[in-house]
Image (cartoon, rainbow, N blue to C red; front, side):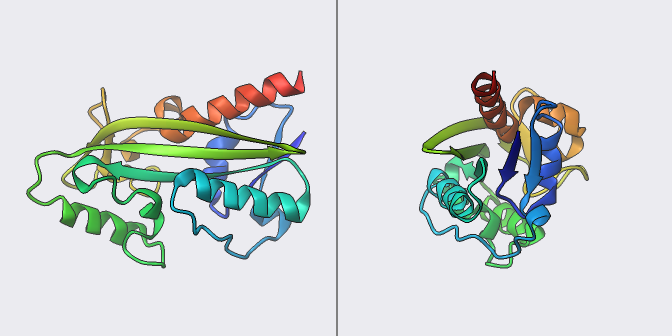
Amino acid sequence: MKILFATQNPNKVKEIQGMMPKNILLIGLAELNVVEDIPETAKTLEGNAALKAKYIWKKFQIPCFADDTGLEVETLHGEPGVRSARYAGEQKDQKKNMALLLHKLKGKTNRKAQFRTSICYIHQNQTIFFEGKVEGLILHEKRGTQGFGYDPIFMPNGFKKSFAEMRLEEKNTISHRALAFKKLIAHLQVSLS
């Protein structure tokens, strides 16, 4: 079975590819020469995931899914949340996003945060949502070189290192995205059997 992951982010495709069963071929938008930005104008992660999945479903009519992920910081009332990728502006600059977040947290003692991923899967007349989340803390400075996004400043509960200090295999056992995708994969395995 071929499934389209509605993302332009090759890091996400690589991260999820290793989790997929052998009988599922995962492709990204680049492999279909889709270069346009899919609108992400919803006010929720679930809404954005649905917008992207529906856009791709209408265009290609093949099983597809899209995700949206947000970092939600408790003391900032859930910021950056749905605006995580564009927190410091529309250019989606990861370094500027982290710098802005660290600036807003300067002097704050509550550094609790959670990463949350929402996935919208569409196949035929079926639309299903899956969610994964991981709680942790925002570090005072960047640590590590792996991963992407806010990984260098997020340390999951129960660990002494940031996501960016973890090997991909280790991160994939606990991350918000991994948890949501495990639910999607379990659904796919049942529906394909």
